[in-house]
Length: 158
Image (cartoon, rainbow, N blue to C red; front, side):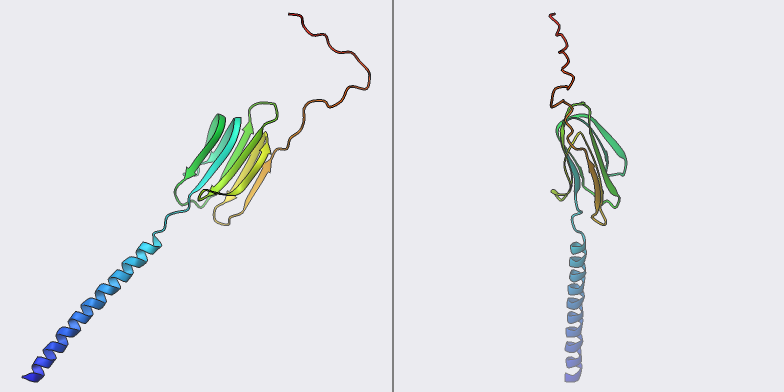
């Protein structure tokens, strides 16, 4: 009888051990799944300009436009994207104007700069490479007199 009792105790212990191992493996599998579910990278656009039009690619890869922006403008893409982000900003007034245009990744600027009167940015979210074109400041006022010694145009008295 002692042999049967020993076999019974051994088989019960093996069953308990198997259940414990199965539970621990299941827990490890759940932890692996949780580790893989990471928060997606958040890309965003940021523009600072007055009297400018902004065109950009939104979260669904569609071109959108904001007209007559004044001040700071931002747009966040809070889902995983695998397409090129594109941003185009242009002044709607003819005088000199600064434009700050950036593409951000998790609130940190990864591409962009300060320009004048227009900016075009493109950023590949997969490779991390981008291209840009910014306008430069060109003075539209004359810095000297004319060499002909001409006359000044009369001003209106009205």
